Every structure is written in structure tokens, then in C-alpha cells.
Image 1 (tube, rainbow, N blue to C red):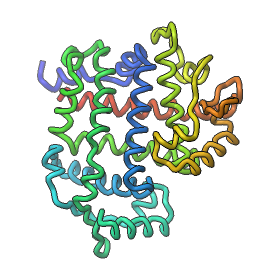
Image 2: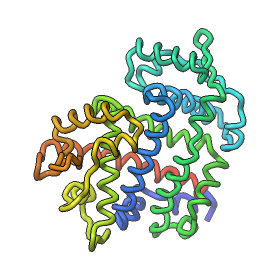
Image 3: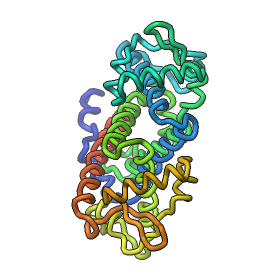
Image 4: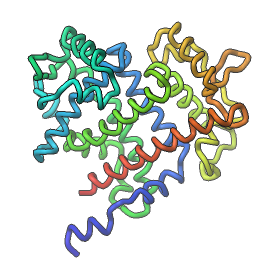
Length: 323
């Protein structure tokens, strides 16, 4: 059998990935939430503004897409050794469409990034400066993604080579072919973030409910007599925990970096929309179908939509890794 035929015969499908994840859905979801919250809070604590962070991410990803278009591939070390990177011609309209920003907001955020030294603008040409690389360098996110890949790969039935991969093996593989892998990752991340902002109204509200979801996933894993194989619907299992200690506004503020006063305002929005519940101790939990089935179903549908996206990304990355 030729190399190409061998690869096609062993190519992983979404069904293969789902079968593996469904053996430990609680662990997978907890690590997914952990990766996403770490990525969001990391950007927020540096920029205090996720719109500006997403513009930097968009510009870097635009560069990765250009590399892929011309069959160029750079390692992690090689890419971050650059003093600056000139972005292929880009217009405000590109940013408006991709990040769901108004023209006025896009211009203002670009001007702020320029004044802060993250980018240099000259007419329609944008150069990403080394300062932006330093802050965007995804060391922790890369490790968190590799933990997800390890959780999935060790339960795969189709590929013995990937079964034995450690998180370090995945990290080294991605770093060697960094711009190729990270283009796929950032495509997912931008889509995930922008849809979250559209759904919840702003990034701070998205982060507040995200940290509550992460807390709930920890509570599920730590639940007494918990068995992953008994989970038929991970969303229902998260929402219907009989006892789940919630988070208070101060803890959410400490974990996300969002000012406590802002956290309180955003939690009130989530309460009004029935996406969160609050108990007598002022602790916040995810909405449950018993409390408000309509709000819960909205959250559940959104959750499974993005679970499909992350699982497609993992399928793509694991098939890259096999090549």
C-alpha cells in the first residue's frame, strides 16, 4: 500500500474523535473550558480590552493564512524571532467583517494599538511589532491545547502511534510546524470569541459565564461517586449537579481580572436573561432546565455548536500530526 493510501485508510474522522471524547466527556470539557478561560483572561489582563487583543490576533492570523497560501511554514522559534512582521494589505472592512466591529471602533482601536506600540500604521500597510509578539506568544495556550489532544489521542482506537503521544510530543510537533497548526487554531478561536460576544453582548459578560462554566466542570469531576462512563449528556450533567458550589463576584473578578463593579453588572445581565442562578449565599451557577428551560436550551445549543467546532479542529490537528 502506498503512503498516500495508508494515510487515507488511517485518516481520523469526526466519529473517531467523538468516540474517544465520549469515554471521558467531563475531563475533555473541563480542559476545554480551562483552555478558553486562560486564553481570554490572558489577553484581557494585558490589553484590558479584548477587542484590541482580537485585532492583534486577527492580524497575526492573516499573516499565517498568507504563509499557507504560498506554502510557507515556520517553526515557533523562527516566527517569534522576527523583530516585526508586515501584514499583507488589509483594510478596515476586513476587520469589521471578521471581528464584528463598527468602522469607527475598528479605526479607534487600531489607533490605540499604534499609539501603544503594538503595531505601526502607514497608509493601508500595517506592521506588527515585536511588543505584540511578546504579549501574544501562546505558551500556556499551547500547553492547554496539547492536554486536550492527549485526552483524545489516548482513547483512540484507530491509531496506535497517537495513543502513545505525550503532551510534550504534541507540543514539539506543533512548534516545529507552528504557523500551519496555529492558523487552524486561531480560525477556531476568532470564530468562538466573536460568536460569544454576539450571543452574550460583550466579552466581559462572556468571560463571567465562562468562568462559572469552568467552575461547574470542576465540581462535576470532583462529585462523589462520579463516573464518566455514566454521562449520556455532558451539558445536562453540568447543569443538573445537585450540589455545586458557585462563585461570588469577588472570586470571578480575581480569576478574570475584570473589575469587581463590572463583574457585578455583568452578572446582573446574566441573571435577567436566566443564564445564571444565584443562591442565598450570593454564589452564581449555570442555569438549569428545572429553573428556566428556555434559557438553558439556548445555552445548551450554543455549547454543542462549539463542541462540534473544537472537535473538528482536533480532528484536523491530529490528522496533521500523523502526516
